[in-house]
Length: 235
Image (cartoon, rainbow, N blue to C red):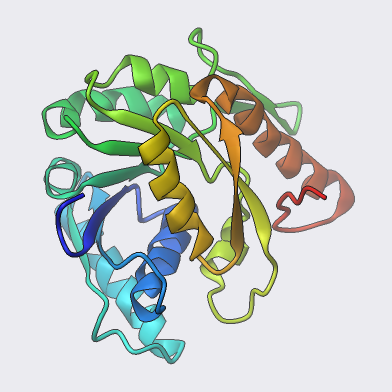
């Protein structure tokens, strides 16, 4: 990464997990040891992305943060991918492969982070349904250029706590898997400064199916036990 500030595109940054990711990453610019960055919110419609960017800056200002050192902009998905060095896919699995085809020319030699979980609702509960490759992360790796480095991370993060940048004091473990040591190191560094997450090395990308499968489990546990915003902690 050669630029002074790391350019990060959050594709699907208008949804719950994407919104929280944008806020937490942006706040690293106010931390002495944070990874200085510029955030680009990507969406199918430029207008939607623009509104989300303005909304994120407004939310940070309303929470009392100085946004003069924070840059959040909106672009369509292709332009966002072209402008970024790191791309986070915060979209449903059934939208992932069409999006990768759309942005393929823009993701050579870049890092893609996948918090994507293929799951379906069955009899009122969520069930993990990985593709034939074994996981969403491996399906993504199969459908990107060879030079693109894929990292699986942020699957088991409660969106509500991620978005609550003021009150949330809980720290959850965040597993990170990749076959590329440099890309994994960068994602773990980003995770370390997000304020509510502790990164743990989860091994190679083939381990991503275990990580992904925990998400429907957490959702089901919350529903069955009247809980909210469950995360994971290992001790």
